[in-house]
Length: 390
Image (tube, rainbow, N blue to C red):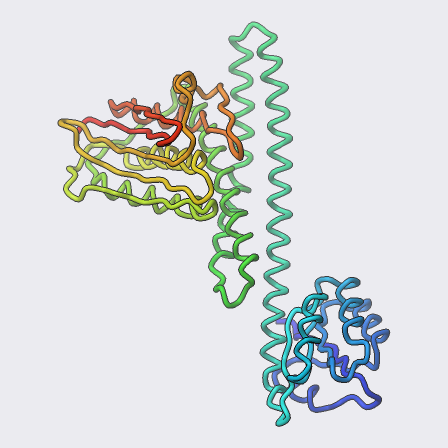
C-alpha cells in the first residue's frame, strides 16, 4: 500500500519536528515546507500529498487555503488552530479546507492529526471512486444514446418501407444492442453495490446519496435493457416458463425487497401487505417475480417524491389477486389500452411509463392463465392487479 504523504505548512522560520515525528510514528511521511510557494511547488510535482496548515502561525492562512484549493481541488487540507480562533476555522472550511483539529496546550492534538489525515485520505478515495462511477455512468448513457439514435434511424426506415423482413432485421439489431449493454451494466451495478456498503462515518452523506442514485439509475437502465430483450424474445416465440409449486408470499417479499433501493432513491415508501395463509400455486417463480417487479417499478415512476407504493395480496374465490397501488396522478382512460403496447410511449414529467416492461409483465401473466386489471383515478392514483388462477 502506498505510504500517505503530507506537507506541513506551519509557518515560522523553524519548522516544528513534533508534528512530523508524531505523523511519522503512524507511518505517515511528513515534509515541512517553508511557505505557500514551496507548498504549491511540491504539490505541482506530486499532488498525492495532503496539506496540514497551521492557521495560528500562517498570517495569510485563509488566502493559503483558497489558493491551494483553487489550484488543487482534490488535495485534502487539514487546518490547525487554537480554540479561540474557531471563527477562522469556519472560514477556512468554507474556503476549501476538508477538516480541522483544535490545538491543545498539552499537545494532545498531535495524536489526533494522524486520524484526521487517514480520515481525509478515505474521503479522497471515495471522491475518486464516485468520480469514476459518474464517468462510467456518463459513458454508458452516451452509448445508450448512440444505440437509441441508431435504433430510431432503423425504425424510421422500417416505417417508410413495407414491413415484413425489414421489421425482423430491426428487431435483430435491437436484440444485439440489448445484449451488448447487459454486461457493462451488470458490472457497473455490482461495483456500485460494493461502493454502497461503505459505512456512513467513512463518507460524506452526499457521497453516499450520489452512489445510491447512480446505482438506481444503472439498475433502471439494466431493467429497461432486460425488458426490451424479453419483448423481442416474446415476439420471436422464444419465451418459455418453468412452472413449479411455490409459496406466493415469498415471491412478493423478494420482489419488494429488490425494488427497495429504487424506492429509497426517489424517497417513495414501498410497503408489502401480504396475507399469511395464501396457498402455494404452480408458477414460474422467477418470471412472476419479474412481472411483479416491473409493476412495482412502474408504480414508483408514477409516484411523486415522498409518495407511497403498496403491494397487497388476497384470495378472490379460485383466483389470487396481487395489487400494486401508487400515489401518482393516475392514467387517463384513453391511455389504459396503450399500457401494454411496447411500441407506444406514455410521457410523464420526470420519467416515462415503461410500456415495454408492462408488455413483458402482461405476457408473463397471460402465459400463467392470468390477467392484469387496471384501475386509475386522478386523486387516488393507479392500481395494477395481477389475477392468477389458484
